[in-house]
Image (cartoon, rainbow, N blue to C red; front, side, top):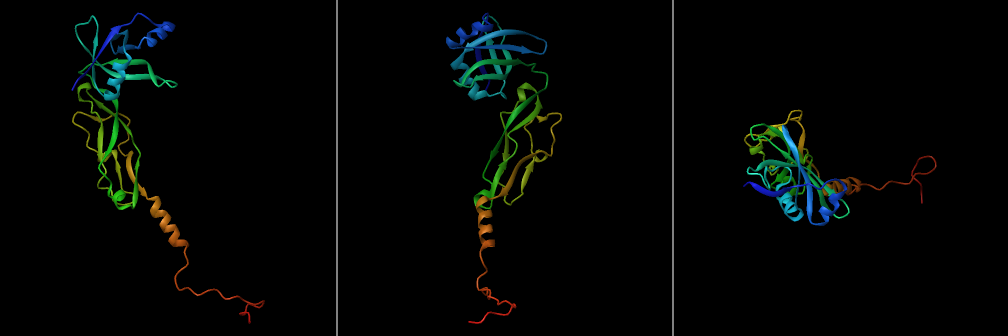
Length: 219
């Protein structure tokens, strides 16, 4: 489902945007290849609500007041005020629907690893985001990786084993042998093995005290 955000052209810039933010607006800019940059603003609540749904890997339709056509965009960068955890600026990248682009897509683990269920291993999620090349209309929301078949320590999944959604492929420069997920030895299992190794063998003879010459000492 296409997501739409309403924005307005912005005349305020520089230090004066502080008043804009205090009024509940987020300043932003729209730019792209062969596209003249335009300053915009939108409601902070509306943007934050949409950003939680879309992230940076979802094509948006930007409806700019005064323009007839909507602009297909991606949220390219969001600046956050670390003190108040509020959005202070957003960059929208306008895209050409007929040109491929590179976008970072979340990698999500699905299912329960057999090793986790049996208590013999723990899952290491090594890759959380993947750069893929695709048309703007084919951007996957996420890459699902089924881990249910991972049963033994050192079982792993690499990028070469994944089937990407239709229309998407690994971006140039991405190593297909990069590790996605791996099973590590369970800490509980390691602790039990260490305890067992440190315990004395059952029924072992106790050592005999030796005298000065090495012979058993007498009572």
